[in-house]
Length: 170
Image (cartoon, rainbow, N blue to C red; front, side, top):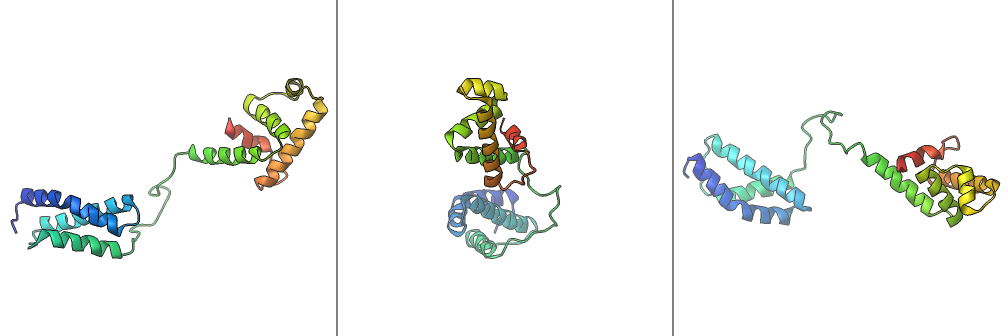
């Protein structure tokens, strides 16, 4: 085979569609297929760059991909906070918001409506009582029952203030 790097790159580029098709057959997910195909290309390219002769590039490339697909993924280095992929910091409050929102939706409507106004608008008990035409004691009682139910639904200890969860949802 020709040892000209430009020839090798053209040959590899020409073989990429077939390589990706095979990778999609071998991989359980499209993103893994692309990773496998890229890894096979890099391995073969490195071999060519090191001066190794490959008589028939297509079968060699496809075999490299098949061999790579049967090997378990190994971790080259210990995972630390610096090299571990992480989610944006805002994703965790979103999860908490979704959990709280779901728990609130399971409350009786009279409790859920009061709790939503309290959480979203910071309404006072007096404002809630006026808005719902209820005695302030009824508002306090319903909110107390709603908080207790949220603690149970979210597996929170009795000492945990539900309002701390509600602040995340704002």
